[in-house]
Length: 211
Image (cartoon, helix red, strand yellow):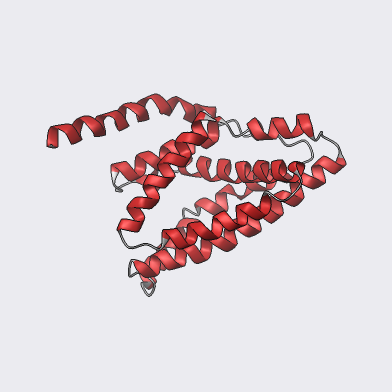
């Protein structure tokens, strides 16, 4: 709960920074809020299954970022820090909702069907929002017709290094009847948390020195 509270706070400040740069984040956020309000009308078991599904998706994406350090090479250190923290946070608690789901809903065929159905729906909704949102932000930043930039995106995601393509096996593992999030044992990345916190603390020190 503490992690998710920090998560929300950081996202709000991150979004405020994007709005200051002219990005239409408020309109995008309104779409997401309306979608979440619809989910809240579903039975609680469905809501929990949806959370389990999204936690696996964010865990896979977080692992992708932590495993491919070149993704953060040459970027602003503040930007790098928030995304690395986000990835570590998602990794640390990736099994919490899954374990709660198995305790509350069970492990039988109905529970399996519920979590897999929720996973398919969650992915359909996530990517149907992500792609147009990304396109809008690229357009706002003036890169919509930059073919060289799009070629880099294609290579990054599905070509070489193809980080999304290489993450697909972990994504597909969710369909295993005996799946558990920690079958992807990447807890070694959690050891980066302390050094990252020191890095973030140094931001405040440097800001005070600059002032």
